Amino acid sequence: MSEQPINGGEPYIVCDNLVKIFKVADLEVVALQGLDLTVRKGELMAIIGNSGSGKSTLLNILGGLDRPSAGGCLVGGIDLVKAPESELVYYKRYKVGFVWQQSGRNLIPYLTAFENVQAPMLFANVSARNRKEYAMELLEAVGLQDRMHHHLGELSGGQQQRVAIAISLANQPELILADEPTGEVDNETASHIYEILRTLSEQRDLTVVIVSHDRNIARRVDRVVAIRDGRTSTETVRRVGGEEDGDEHSHEEFVIVDPAGRLQIPREYLQQLGIEGRAVVDVEDGRVTVRSAADDNEEEAPEDTPARRGLFGRGSG
Image 1: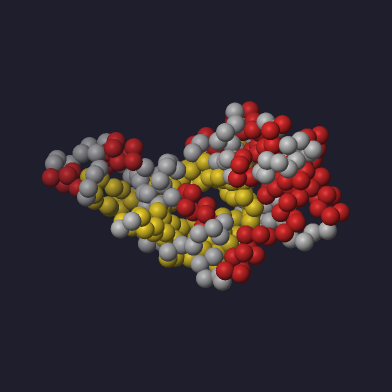
Image 2: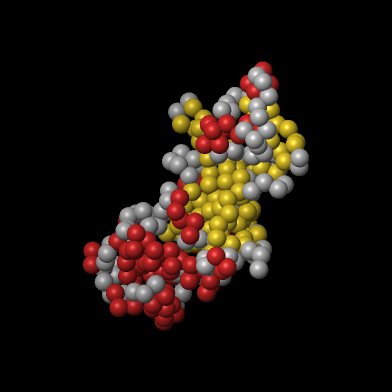
């Protein structure tokens, strides 16, 4: 059986040539430089990248907390670039839920877990009876029904994050944005949190976007998009199949080619091939090859050296 991507739903998030420029004193800092991204409805995906790559800026834009400087950003049919402020308020209250790394941003310390989950529903004018019933349902979904009347100081870091996940679902959003949700817990607790997010995504048809520094997150989600220098650079897709090898899932990594034909070749490949500055691009035997421009001034390399091999294109591995 051929391998298939795990998720093939309709596009829910579409970012087109997204640009974000911050002005710091007299300097302009370009955080996003023409980023393109599509996320499917119901997908559980992660965005990774080094500090300063633009991933947190992207999360803030997707959450309606900041507006892009240029480009397009549609989430669930809402244009986050052109939407009036009143529509953004509605979007942030009912369409998207947040889970932050720091528990102080998720929870009110003097309230119990049960009261914390009910808090967003107060602003939505949900009746007291419905608030309590739904809060109990959500705490049960994250495995904390026996800790619902405990305060913040009586809960472990992992339990606090599970309460935060329940809070993010309080107003029944379609999208969950999680910023380093496992950054302050151990590996075992992190695995539990990822499992809860996957179960909730499947049961409630939630689209979940996780920002992380952890490059091993690929086995936890359907797809990983890496951002470098404000643009998407690579994408790792989890696929179903491969049972003949004894594995339930496998992964395949791709480089991203934007509509203008630009792509970011992994830095380690460029270093291996000695490519810097100018390069020569050719089509050879159905493959696009890239080699250092310096090679044109030297003897032609042997056919099977790295400088002559195709880096990407039809038929490449």
